[in-house]
Image (spheres, rainbow, N blue to C red):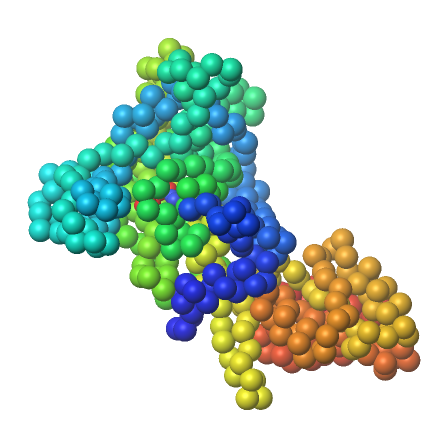
Length: 449
Ligand code: ATP
């Protein structure tokens, strides 16, 4: 977390610079739902690519899938979501406001008796009215599939992406000839009817997850869990400051119904250390339940040892939007340059929405053809922007604010010496290079961040 950045500053920058907009804004918005703008979509895609490269391309034993959002409703019975995917909720008897009981009590537990005791003397924060007893609220979004709306056609928008991995476990094994241990990764939308969506991208009702499920022999589960837990922390440290990250183990009352071990990787947001990723040892819960509910035997037969068993699952699960908020918070920097405030998003170049901006010194018929040619040379290799409006100083500030690592300036001398200036976002140092050597110079400078 930058010392100074507040959520209001981030929301305002995200909107002003076209990262994130409120969904349906012209109709007054819709609670807990956001749209991603031109820079936002690049930024988010870069985060997803970075994760995919790390989790899939760097491991011969991890493959990807892209499963459907709507599954057979039996999937959610087997997974326990129909019965247990609940948050404890209380209502105000007077103003009817609804609250998450655990958040109101500031207790990391889902135990209703414990919450009831903790909230015994608590009144509604809005109007001071009396609160109901805590009760479970199912967070799955329901819809109907087909022309008839009745209980037989109820389906759900998936509240997590991993169930589509378990239901494809056998297909993937059959088609890729993976032997245990191996993992399946997926990136996709998830939907939760959160009681109180809040903190901008942190708690939304529609969001994206990046999940990897690793299937192992039960005896290997603890060791594998420890390995992935550390690997995930190492990955976050590439994009987020180490001092703003920490592990937190879930207490017994807090653990999901399936979890044998659950650790969060937390980031220090302006509103405190909060989960960005969960790493879980799910035991044999998932494949046992799907075996039971589907009637398909999902156990594994090890040809070498002749042992037959239900694989255990080690899960790593991170929210794209929540991670994006952490990265934005971490990158946000305010500096004073020559008596003026400069706002810079100090993104790692891999995730910066624009890598290079080509800026002719001024809008001028002589400069434009060369500047366009320089842009053309970079376009396709890097997401590069071309901008010739406003003063050069204002254009630098604009690129700083969207986190563009490098600006290439084309000036009148360039017409004679066929050289341009590369400006470094963080140091603001400038280097003169020949246009013919620009590709190499850009690639070297991007590595210097
Ligand atoms: P929380 O306790 O904050 O509700 P959770 O423990 O329910 O989160 P998981 O079910 O473990 O979260 O989901 C994995 C990841 O998905 C989380 O670490 C988070 O990054 C992301 N995530 C979960 N719920 C939301 C949400 N409502 N909005 C945005 N991201 C979310």
